[in-house]
Image (tube, rainbow, N blue to C red):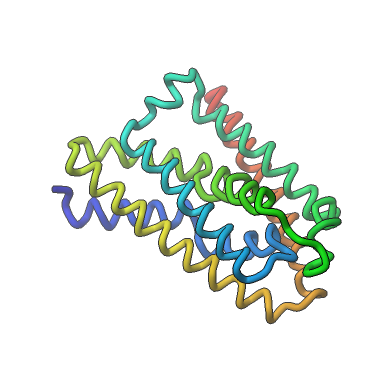
Length: 209
């Protein structure tokens, strides 16, 4: 069995990497126009998918990426570019033609599922940082029993994230239409900066700068 220090270190590392408080407002920007039930569905589905992704890397370590011939640096660059496109759309309202009509336009099941997978589950929750952290932690949990404990840690951290996303819906009610518009653009800029940082880190890692 892993020591308590190992478990605490793993929980701290994953929570800091996943960053539930930081993801909650970004989640609001991505789900503008959705009802409370729809937001909860996106949060639940995205959390489950992210847990599955991180659990696979906890069990296999870097084997999956190595098998595909993909480096962590390349993964960071790809994730950063995809995030930057989402940020661009948030800032310039390219995503909002359907969303801003709120209850007048039905948000389809496919739309909910798509947002849950991308960009919520990947790369926002189970992004390069979280995957890298999971791979590194898996080295400290070598036995099958210890890997099981690591998966338990991942489940705990994802549960905290899910609660943060559910609470984010209450914040949305307080913001109103104007507040949401301002927040969406502000978070788009922050997300763009985060995306650029992903790319910079990826380039440094890929070329060992």
